[in-house]
Amino acid sequence: MKKLITYPELLSKILARSEDFISNPSLFKIRSFIEGYDFATKGCCPNREFYRGFNFWVAERYFVKTTHDWQSIISFEAGSEAEAIKLAKQLWHEYLETQALGASVQNCFIEAENLTSTKTSDLFEILQERPTLYIGHASVTGIRSFLAGYTFARQIAGIKEDDLLYTQFSSWTANRFNKAVSHQWDEIVSFMGISESGAFALMKDLWNEYKSGLG
Image (cartoon, rainbow, N blue to C red; front, side, top):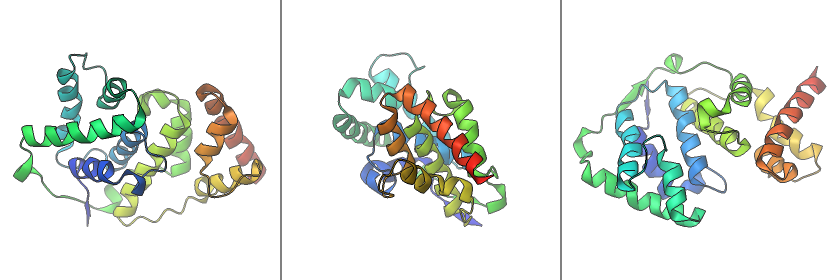
């Protein structure tokens, strides 16, 4: 049985050192990462509702509808990505203090077999078809961040990522466009696709091309 990171701990860690979890961090990527972590753990960790409550707290703070999530509200109010991350840190710390989480934080233990067993490549295809359901809108960076959170939870639980179909897609994409393999697939696709909608369409085309080449 492995000890997982609780939702409050995870958001605190990411906001403190976001570059350790996400390349070129943004609030949207951070929220997508946590959603992927949540999907992997099936929302079983304690204090999940405390994290969800941050949405309502931020909405009330800025007098907006609770249909908006904390990331979109903070990004709108901050104006720039750098200021958004700074504001998110400030608001999260204030939320922790005012809601007095403190001693109520519970450890989260889980058996590896109780995590979501969906293969990463299969989940990738699910996200391609229904991005709005999982990350809010069609975004290649959001999808990769979601998958990063998903695999992060599984690694903590001791599950080795052995889905080569997905893990080798990044190097294939770099070679496809003659780019350095240090670039992740979403960075390359975002650059080559020009617009967000163009990048999303390109991602789907490249994935199909990649899979057909393996057959």
